[in-house]
Image (cartoon, rainbow, N blue to C red):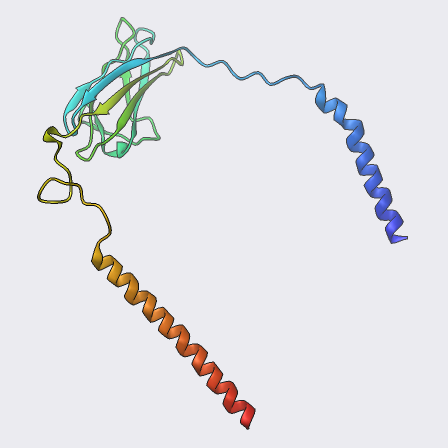
Amino acid sequence: MKNSMLKAVSSAALAGALVMAPIAASAEPYTPPTTPPSDTDTTYTAAPGVPVTVALGGFQAGEPVSVTVSGLNADDATLASIVKIAATSPAASYTAAGDGTVAPTVTLPANASGTYTVTGVGTVSGVVSAATITVAAAAGGAGVGTEDGLAATGLDSNSLLTLWVGGGALLLAGGSIVVASAVRRQRQSTI
């Protein structure tokens, strides 16, 4: 009785799925939402800690524009040396000039490296405009980490020593537990 009931429920579920499959197949195809026009073709080069003014365009005249900076350590970058930037939230609001442009001044953090993207989004038109700032290489090719200008590579021997001592202590503790439990079993079996 139990098996026949299970078979009946399974058959009904399978039949229902087969009946509903054509309905799902005839659903309307997905059309992605249209995105507002974009003006992304400007690239700048800047040194860490040096302000650079970027041009973002394509907005309506007088439109409020929300500007953000994203990139490595972008939360330490500043717009116009006043507003602290968070890479994931709108950082500053500017008003587009009569020609539809805004020109925020961005100061990259002292430890900046790689590329940063300054993005402006028109709050009325939805236009997205972006500029890329590439961090300039350090002058003279000096490396970081050693007196001779070469990059510090490899592993610090003090860290390795700590790892070996900690691992040895864990092995010693584990071995002691095994020996103690073996001795306890031995004593209990002789009693």
